[in-house]
Amino acid sequence: MTYRPSRIQILLGTRKGTYVVEGNARRTSWKVGRPAHVGEEVYHVIADPRHPGSLYAAVNNGFWGPAVHRSRDGGRTWKEVATPLLPRTRNRPNPMEASAPAPKPVANLWHIEPGHPSEPKTLYLGADPHLLFRSPDLGASWDPIDSINEHPARKDWAPGAGGACLHTILVDPRDPKRMYIGLSAVGTFRTENGGDSWVPTNRGVLAPFLPDKHPETGQCVHHVAPDARDSDTFYRQDHGGMYVSHDRMDHWIRIGRPLGDDFGFAVASPPAAPGRAYFVRLNGRDRTTGTGYFQVQEWNDDRKRWRALVRPNAFPGTFGVHREGISTDNLDPPGIYVGTTTGQLFVSPNAGKSWQQIPFAFPGIHSVAVANPASR
Amino acid sequence: MSPAVEVRLDGWLRQFGAPSRESVDADSIDHLIDALEERYPRLKFKLRDETGHLRRYVRVFLDGKDVSATTGVSTPLSDVRVVDILHSIAGG
Image 1: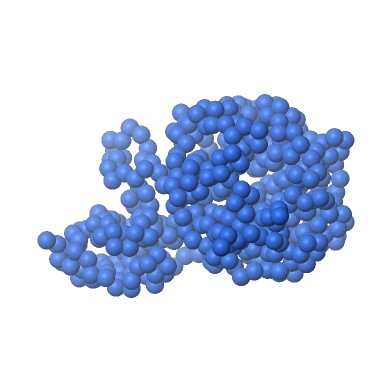
Image 2: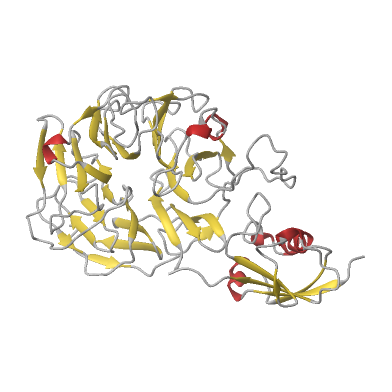
């Protein structure tokens, strides 16, 4: 019997497992379910809206390696599916003779992205070291995308502090062949031909840690969120600040200056409120909110204005938020969901007017996503 | 024909279908793991990564001697009676 979720679910990937938190219709009451993948690092959990009830988790076991897991019943049960791997070789090169470096194994899995609605069995997966894969069969097998995995400039691609992660994958809702990816610390790229070739898209983004402050690549993009109204518009949280692009990432405009230090990792933009993007500003030096309380900043791209969404001191403390740490639902008004590196989960059911902290101490949260209830 | 060695497997490997003990004919650690993976396919890539090396926190002992960080998967099994495959003390 096909599982069809009737309740909204918050999906958490944490340092010690996967959590599913179910809410009521008003999004004011939440129940924390039994964790899965207990003790394992889960970098990302996501719902596949093309198949209600299907969830995917990027599980990175410190002992036994990475694995993709799938649930077909809204997180009640999980099963390991295929995990992308580089072609295995038994002929390890002699380091004294090798002309090319030995292949590195797939390290951590960072992001799973359902494909375009017209390709209902396609999944994408980003991994470390700077790897992109496509599955044609909902995770039963994976094909490496050589245009990235064998890119001639790879030798110059540096990792970020979290590793050589390919962490952002966006598919244009108008055209499955147009995609965008983000890699640390390489930047963003766009393809117009389904991944046959890619162009770097980092013009205007500062690389404060490089001698050349505006290189073609080398920026440390942290995350990018698409606008729901205009598929040419994107919001970007980068090591070098907060940005918007209105031209498919050809040019980026820095918007974060009014916030002072506009460092951060996470950004989200809600389907029900296009033109808005939510950022969690952090201090670049210590990667925490640093103000003494939890805060979310809203960028209004129509009015070109910032607004703080959380009453100061409503939630005192020092918080970190990872790149997948903020998400929205598809309801109106939009719900906003933020998970912290110290295990707090903050929820607003009304676009930031009011907030509650879920009364549960989670392990440090890597990722937050929402499984919207299936439409009837 | 290689002599059979007794393999004792980490309890955590049960989640991948592995037993606690197994008898395997193999002349090296590599071939021993090949044989285990053939019998228990879900073990594939759990002990070795796809380049063929032992994963960082997998430890292999031959009659009590840890070879993980030295000769690793290419270690021959001549005159070895018991192979222990364990995970190391790590994490937090």
